[in-house]
Length: 635
Ligand code: ATP
Ligand code: MG
Image 1 (spheres, rainbow, N blue to C red):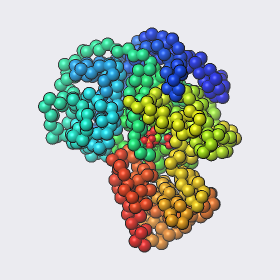
Image 2 (spheres, rainbow, N blue to C red):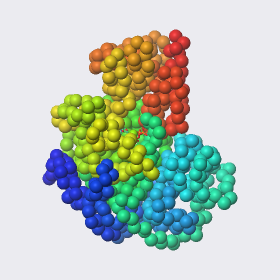
Image 3 (cartoon, protein in one colour):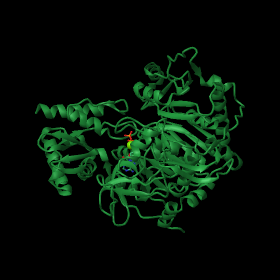
Image 4 (cartoon, protein in one colour):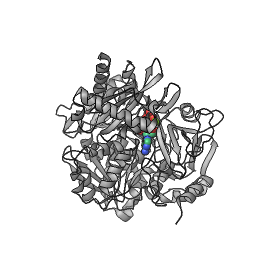
């Protein structure tokens, strides 16, 4: 068996041989003539001349061997719906949807904006688009009108595919009101809006000449067979906007062949899936994790995928494990945020179910703190694999690769660079390469491997400027994250480069302080931001969620716990890292993808406008921050 080290070395030293082999994991209509064209750095073209199609690889090619196996398992605890589609049924639905789109004049290169709840039609629409060679852009369903409008203006879609409503925690979110506002705000509104009517919005009214009812269109194409539009490997397959945690979202453009090969390879080497098995990714198709691993990854690999609409704690906090047990899920993928939500619940819910089918639980999206990692791995008794990636890369940059070699994990570390990524830690100022135990910016020496973004949609210049010009005289992809590598080669992510604060000349990552605060057993979760201070330049300020809110119900209780937290931080980092204040809240303001909106907390703490809050999940989080700051000022 190859070791991880050899495997990785070969991918870097002989990328063409390495990726040429991986390319066999997918079907090609016409073989490529060259594995890599890197004649125009930093733009990389993978599998030049190869002709393929994503929908063919995710659906059609499985009809031969697994037509009657499950492909899409849809479970909604919001509506009670529960439907499984075999590959044959998925194929039929995708063809119907493709016929509907084709009838509306959609073809190669046209953009389609998919603004959908987590229902099967969302996946049908994605696959139908790529079948036709159209470029889809999935926008998280339920995003406010303003966020939707800015993405419409950037992608300029010909058609929007949407639904009457989504559901969250039992409450309907009426999409049509949001869509109407977005179209009004937009400078390039789509000409057509196809609406899947779930019967949730009782007042749904179609706008004549623009809105179309999906069910009636579909009825006209029940036996449709729409031929696949074959694409050259580098032709774009989709656009997906980054989460917007640090500012304006960027339209990440992905190719066709590289994307398919990268996902197929990751299913094998990272996720250790097997064709015929079931994968459950708890994310949403509007985020890269769900985009890659609810739809394309598992299907390309011939696995069934669970598509879940609902919360992790409804009807009770055992729901995910019930799904794992019932569908014998072997690969599960979730986020630290979701696990922290479950950690606050009674663990008996987890023990009720037989989750022994699970091989690994993968987590990504945010730093995985040690207590959370320990809690879930003890509870599940399966390896928990933290892996690190970005919308830009489409798949993991750092991960352990149990499909290559079972390496021990270290809590708090997403392990090693994935094959294909030549990861370097660079000194922020000089750009010099750093050694073990030296903190630097996580960068990737280009060319980026297959599956990574090929450019920013419509803005080649911005792609180069944003991602490749952080270091003088050196064309290097920056992740905008801090990291460190230990003596054993394990990497640790230390937060975002713009989350660094400067306290009296000392540079501190807010993440390090957060880790320290989390070391107190009463703290469930914490966000630390740097706040302008006349004396010290900046001071850290902590907003902490306590496990048991009664402990901070009184001013005395808060004072005692704050003091204890100070002591914990002093011990871990020294007094320099000690927050000026620890505010106790029951909820942190987070984006809908579960990322803490530190920039808004910081703005409020500095008495500034919190900026765009439309990506917020629950507005009470930011209100609590506001209230905590106001009460501090009053005292
Ligand atoms: P934007 O780029 O628009 O500000 P974003 O960076 O939040 O938004 P994503 O691409 O969804 O958008 O998130 C990627 C980022 O999430 C990474 O750069 C990193 O900061 C963080 N991240 C992802 N996985 C991990 C992980 N396993 N450990 C630590 N941080 C992680
Ligand atoms: Mg980012």
